[in-house]
Figure 1 (tube, rainbow, N blue to C red):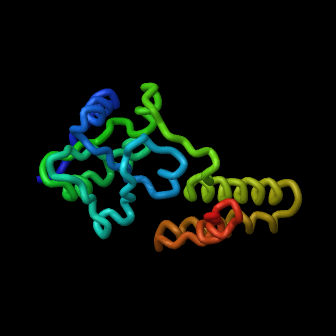
Figure 2: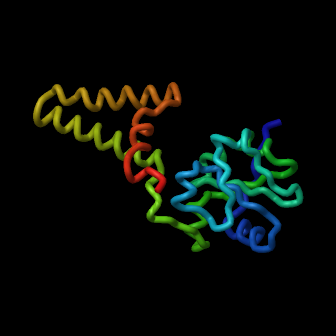
Length: 175
């Protein structure tokens, strides 16, 4: 039998949190959580879920969330297995919570999430290389080819060289 997460609307989750019936668990990575999260949500990144464990009182309901609900949906078996009893998901994630006008804690001084930085960097390099290849010299088309090969390698191996380089950037260093 396939495990599932029971969807709850933002209003239902807010009510359960307010009366202390539930615990909200944010499964996004630490850099994403640091930038924006629902007040009181526990940060338990998917990348370390099994090794770190949830450590939540058995008497409380566990409601999982991510940004849009896609990550929780794609990992519902893992998440449901981490909970004794019923497991819930915030329908539409943090984005739906925000759209309902519910409170969100945002730290605009925290760096952009690493994945967004990689997307901006890779997209910028591809665009620049393509434009230079068309307008200046075809040799510049090597830039988008190199970036594409890097993204393919990252997808296949899980190692992202661009993310490693960006992590060294001054804006990503913990002060």
